[in-house]
Length: 322
View 1 (cartoon, rainbow, N blue to C red):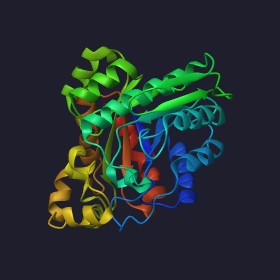
View 2 (view 1 turned 30 degrees about the vertical axis):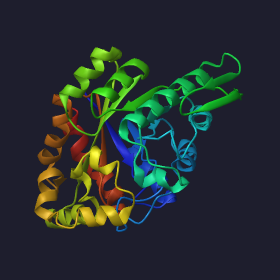
View 3 (view 1 turned 180 degrees about the horizontal axis):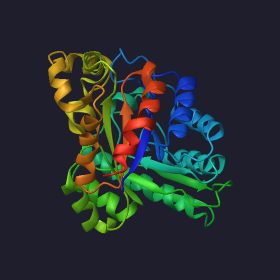
C-alpha cells in the first residue's frame, strides 16, 4: 500500500499558515509531509516564498509524529553543502528522527539570487555529486572533513550536533544521469513524473529496494469550475517539465511562458474538483509506475483545512485501497 503525503507549498501560503495546515494534515492522517525550498514563487499570483528551514523547525515543534522532508533542497549554489548538512542534522534532532533530506540540482528561479552563473545541467549534476559526498561525509561524523573538488572546498568541517538516527538522503531524478547519481548515493529516489523507466534506471544504479517518492498536484474544490480556475491561475506552469522549469529565471518568465496555457489544458493535467475517483487516478499513475510514496499538493492557500477534512473523510480511505 502506498504512503500518502501532504505538501507544504511555500510558494502559496504564509509561513505561519503552512505550519497550521500541516497540523491539519497530521490530524487527517497523512503518512508523511514534504516542503518546497524556494526563494521565489513560480508565479506572482502565488504570492509567497518563506524560508523552508525555519518553517521546518516550527513544524517539528508543532506536530507530533508526521515525518518531514525537503522536496527538494539544492545544495550547489544558494546553500553550501556543509551548511545543508548542518541544517539537516539539526532538523533530525528537533524532529525526533522524523526528517529526510531531499536534494536536487535546483532551478534558476531560486539559485540566481546569489549572483552566480547558472550552470548547464551536466555541470549541476557534477556539483550535486560532490555536494552529496560532502554531506554524507559530515553525517558519518568521523572527525573533521576536508574536501577539495572541482566545485566545492571544505576546510576542517565538523558537525558537533549529530542526531542519534542518521538523516536519510533522497535525490531528485529526471533522466539517466540523475538516476545514476541517486542509485549510487541516495537512500531514496524523488521524482515529479510517474515514469516507471526512472525507477528502472535507479534500481540498475544501485537503488533496488529503496523507496521511490513522487509528488502530484491536485485541486480539490466542491465546485469543479472554481478548481479549474484556481489551478490555471496558480499552476499553469506545472506541465512544462523539469527541463524547462529548471532554466527559467523568475516569475515574470514563467508568466510569459505560460501565457497561452488555457484552463482546459490545465484541467487535462491536474485532477480538479470534488470527484474522489479523479484524484485517486492521479495518484494511481504513480503507484502503477512503482512509487512507494506520493505527496499531494493541494492548490489554493485558503482551501487547505477543508481539503484535509475531505481527505480524511473520503480521499485517504479511497487511496488506502491502491
